[in-house]
Length: 118
Image (tube, rainbow, N blue to C red):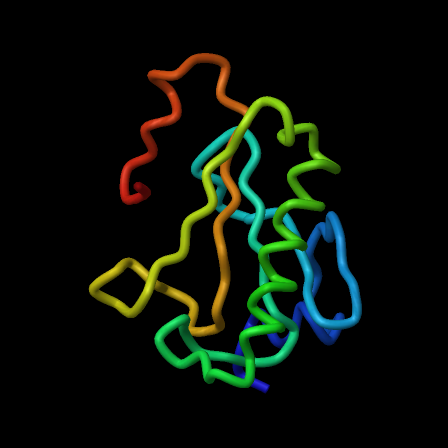
């Protein structure tokens, strides 16, 4: 298995897991771009959001619910956060396993402008 995120989902690679259920997982990014920077993934390998099939819409919905749960667990539910996804190399995607970036925890609004993130 060459995909790092598949290895994390299978517990073959280490990550600080914040939340997981049968289909999804949220864990800390090892190269954070914000005081709190989590990655939210489906455990099923999907290379990019551009590769999501219509029959996977429920799984993608579960990924969003996992992001909500993870934000709640790390105290961002009330403070607010960014949820972003990079699509393809031109969009900044570096690991080709669908993942959402959950970013937050800034002490002021000026800090929330993250280079490379909307």
